[in-house]
Image 1 (cartoon, rainbow, N blue to C red):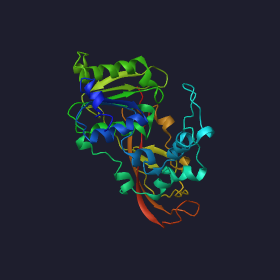
Image 2 (cartoon, rainbow, N blue to C red; image 1 turned 90 degrees about the vertical axis):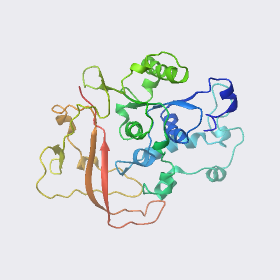
Image 3 (tube, one colour; image 1 turned 45 degrees about the vertical axis):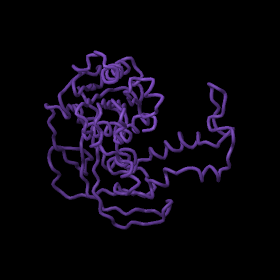
Image 4 (cartoon, one colour; image 1 turned 135 degrees about the vertical axis):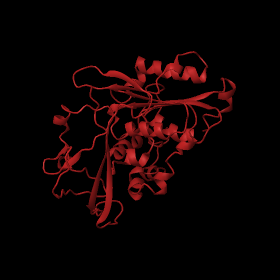
Length: 335
């Protein structure tokens, strides 16, 4: 918000400010735009999740350890106060985490620990999460939401849900392939960003007025992706089918499984990975028969679970809590 309304920036520019970034620099845009900065005129959210709880912390209701990995690998090694124990910049030769070292106790006191905070707030209704959820109704500026088919539960869902929920009357949804970050820096990606911002920030005739509201690539295991477009999402031609989980064969089938069966696994508050083989759909074989343009939307599983918390930061045991898990698992689109 402060960056958008910096007086010197506004004075030296057209007065129209745009938000642009990939990954972490895309995620923050949803919150900024919901504050409705007066000079914000366009935003390009490139692979950026919009719901921290459902996409970053509990993907499909299942605790993801990605947040721990991210915190340990990208936050702790650059915390201010590491001094000579941290990294040295190749650009200016200075210590990235500042020249004055702090003790381990001082470093710990100066930070909010994501790992502890997320475990202390296990529900989506906790203020820790609701305070981070943007008010999509207040996002009114032109929006380009660019999603990666390979983003799985994190950024892919965030880009789609952010696009659908944003109140902006001028919004576009774009799906691309390749690795995370890559397409943001390719010539194709740069051209798309310039075309969008040139139109809304500089008033240039970039041809953006003819850009389809939804554009996407259909992937194929052995062939190059095919470019498609639509007027809405999901596209008008998409037909959703219902498949049922067969616990005996660990597969999906159009027919409902007639018998009652039980699958068990240990799930604890520290977030041990579920034994995916228990509920793995044999997608490899089914992809030979099923063409998918969108994604597998949801499983509803009725789960009787016992949290084993004795090894965790919070020594609270939740016994026999009945929960419903909604699994949002994108399926790789095929041609």
